[in-house]
Length: 388
Length: 117
Image (cartoon, rainbow over the protein chains, first blue to last red):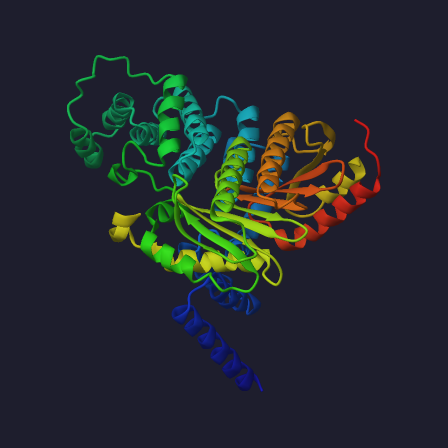
């Protein structure tokens, strides 16, 4: 009986693995990861969830499985740290717990812990460093100016408390490089070199930045200057200094790096959107570029006119993206608007916008699945960036 | 109203909630200390108004529920008749099962009848 059960499980797992290879999708990755969870194979579930997230970064189910698997493996450590926090709070305990929450992908909790720690131990540089790192990673991921400003505030606080904190100098240099404040970037890299003269990468990068003609300039970046520079990055969606050019001195969160290396192939995306046509219940579908120009669209007789639909999509995207940024929750991933008869889904995919207006039998969750499939088919490795 | 919001906030993944009119006037709120009531209310009223205007212009009518998924959090705006229920959630929470709780809270707020601010 036991052998029979084992054989059955083996066959089931190889079938699910084959499905992932043949038709990778959030659903196929989730199915395989969930089976691993059911069999108590948490590490394997985590690997599958992370592989899936590499292609489908916004897949909710895969996020949940990843968090579940990570939490399970870190449960003991979290419990111990929570107990320590209640008994004898210290910056180490707070920041260790914050780091675990970062690992779990719960940046909000990590930021809250760092903020509590900073309030309790204002002369310790560690909580500010955690805040700075998270904000910089967010800026790398989504180019939201507010994150750049918050990152700078926190990191400047670190170097004020501890001028020898090399990690903070590196992160500040990277931030200034990203927004194009080169004199400030050089200054912090020189601080790193002074304390670590053997850092060849830093020396090479400083050479690459060119001669410091502006050496005598006041290289302090004021808050207004940073808001303006980071605002330009947010508006254009392009960093002043390419992230990949900066030496890899600090390992950023893998998710941010992975996301920033994923590029959309516009032709594949346009072709994939055309496949939406004919889906029962779908009234309008549309693909727009970053300037709101229509790249592809489909409308049925029950749908809206092209211009009317485009207007509503632009408005919903702008409103939702603005609301997300004001709430400090990053950038818009998707807006799902449900009405008595029709529903509208607007998805932001890097600079592109995908929208669908639909009614029964099509449902909001199914539309999201369809969009994720389209996304997966449109992802191109960095080498294919040309058309992105 | 406050007890409905408090009960809703007990659902795993829900960080806070508030009931707000379209003009941004807060009727009741239950938010964590890192979320400022005025900021959330102003953002919610602005988002609701702009979205409704856009939908009405194209003849789509009002919405019953508006879910906003952002890279680091989620928000739901549910129509409760005289006001809107605004729910702030964690990024990793599964919206599906939570929607049932939100819908139930929205229904109960609706049943409270006239709201005086």
